[in-house]
Length: 101
Image (cartoon, rainbow, N blue to C red; front, side):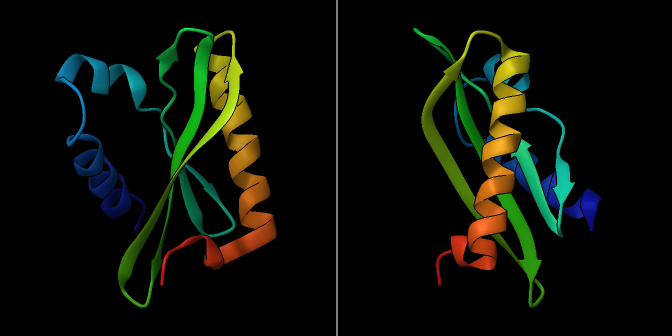
């Protein structure tokens, strides 16, 4: 399943920006409670953005949710860490309800 979702997320990332920027933004997918979290930090004027794609296979279909928070971090590594923390909290609080019906 992980490889399938990874390929799906790679295709999802292919729809925005040029190849160089896409390669710099995408981070490794982290599994958490059956969800896959792929941080996608972006360089912004105040540092690095806090954003990710959360996905899960439900009833044989991949559901995805892209989120962006106002929080920023000084480094890309810091943004990834902050993003993972925010995504885990979102999953803990809302579970599968984060996905549109």
